[in-house]
Image 1 (cartoon, rainbow, N blue to C red):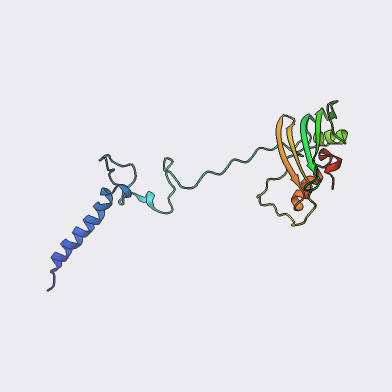
Image 2 (cartoon, helix red, strand yellow):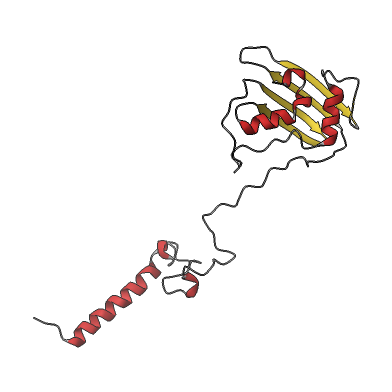
Length: 192
C-alpha cells in the first residue's frame, strides 16, 4: 500500500506545523508559561539573533560570571612614610614568636616603636609605600621551587592610610624575594 504524493505532502505539512508549534507551547522552550502568561524568551522561529555569531542583547542573562575585582594594593614608589604596624615573626615551628611595633611619622620612627631597626624600617616604608603588598599567590608569576627556611611573619596595620594585612614566608623563590624586600620592616629576627 503506497501513499499518494498529495497524502505524503499533507503528512509532511502536518509534521512541520507540529514541530513549529510544539516549542511555542512548552514553557522550557520559550513558549507560554504554566500560568498562561506570555514568555519573554524567543521561540524556535526567532530571528537571526539566535545564530552563534550574534552577541546576546543587553538584557539577556549569561552563565559566565563577571571577573573578580582586582584587590587594591598600596602604590609602589615613594610614600609619606607614615605607618602603624604590628609585626610577628616566627623563626621556626615550635619556636616562640617575636613581636614588634613600628610607628613611623614622615619616615622617622616614633617613640612608641619597639623594633630592632626602626630607622631602617621607617626609611624603607617611605622609599616604597607598597613594600608590604607582596604579589598575590595564584597569579601567572612563575616562582622557583626552592626552600628558604621555616621563617614566617605577619604584618598588620596601616601604611600611608592603606590597610596592611600581609603574610611572609620563605617557601619558594617568590616568597623569598618578598621576604628579602621587606627584611628591614620584618626586623633583625626577620632576616634569614
